[in-house]
Image 1 (cartoon, one colour):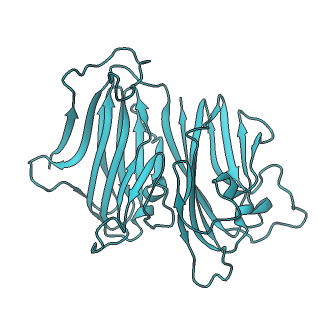
Image 2 (spheres, rainbow, N blue to C red; image 1 turned 135 degrees about the horizontal axis):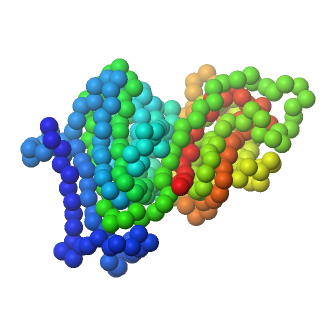
Image 3 (tube, one colour; image 1 turned 120 degrees about the vertical axis):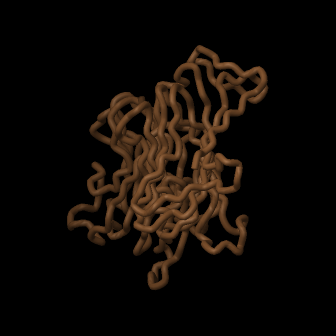
Length: 345
């Protein structure tokens, strides 16, 4: 069934030729044409979704020419309870064969451990229970929004990859983007997922300090020019003390990290551990679940986020960031996963 592409244009809309012109405030002329790709029923009926079979991919949108994605909204009716991890969001820029974004759907939206929570921050929001209908058959669903600006020069493609053998019975989406006469930015948005499986509970004797980041959970290691804008970190903690791990960042190939933190909860805007879920524009805790049988009150499943909207970290040649699993990685029995977000030429 045909899907609809909707363009919304003011009566005086025009495409400006200068790529350097940025969209101004709401009281200024806007130098782009607003458009949308959605799952709307092309016949005018109300079948406004697509079904994605098990172990298959669905191309959500393909845009041509220069532009910028400004908002993506999704909701899914899955058959697999683990859909948040088994569904992957992939985004390609300018005809490239390798996606710049290839991340589990839930983790991309700051929700680890396969669970949905209600929250909002500077770049994303998830609308979930109790705001959604209490009578929903699947209580682990929601409306997923992200507002990362994503410029491109020659085109963009967005794909939902269902790696489960069960179908997504209904996938609804709206992709809002801008059409520009020439590229609005030389930078491209990227997101990368990383996971560190459980290791030994304690470090070898004689390893009480960690000046070099050995055994750290790797968040991002990339080459090129750009700037880092944030991270989502999920921890399946068998014991407490994991938040004593420090963040470490190496910029442009330096031998010793020049940006070093004082603890995991400190980097993510908290202090003295985390006790409850909360959300602010720049940092927060979206998931905090205690697990039956884990006696340590600090154990459990956590997802935390920090966005550097006010303080992005630029790099000209390379960028590497990691974080300890506990002090000097003495909590390597905890499972870590993360999503890094950055822009790069």
